[in-house]
Length: 262
Image 1 (cartoon, rainbow, N blue to C red):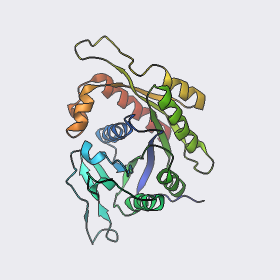
Image 2 (image 1 turned 90 degrees about the vertical axis):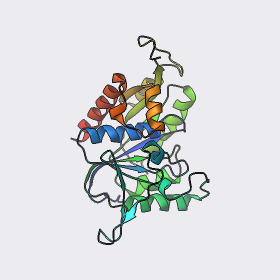
Image 3 (image 1 turned 180 degrees about the vertical axis):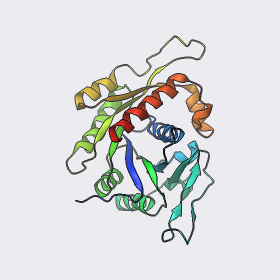
Image 4 (image 1 turned 180 degrees about the horizontal axis):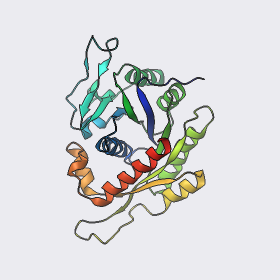
């Protein structure tokens, strides 16, 4: 199957996970923010149709994409925050109600969000996929040209088992999306009052073991930081985050990914 190149976008990167609760959407948001602060034209698509959280993270839950009849056949204009063009299924559904859609409906909804949004010219479009290996991931990855994917996990064995399934989906010849590497989230916790201490709440070494097993790089180990959680709750802004470990980790993550392409 010949994949479709999304018009005007140089590179598309998927952020995936085998299970929920590993911080995938937070990673996707911070990834996009770091790209934007480095001067790249960046878009962020929230494809997590059953649990869209990007609008909450950027404090734009009450926003709605507009349509300009003069622009590219009535396409939606994404919401822009912190130099990122954002679209999400969360803009079109009531946040307190469950989305009860079968597989083809969810796949069609994501396809529409991709093709009927006026992204303009972007260096990078980051897609925050729902956890798992369902219809949304399969349809989108088979239909569109995606340059690479990052698998997010925690060090826990149960998370690694699910992350492995997500990685195997990418490597399947029917999907054919390059696996850029593994990001281990919540690697340790350091209390602000004891900056020299590390508590490995979810175990250690899981991300490295998975990366070695799959023969891909461990792109980053990201600590569990209260400051980041607060930022997510009140509209994510990397400028407000002072934790140098987090900032330098994401800066190095971006460098390793863009070096792959540029």
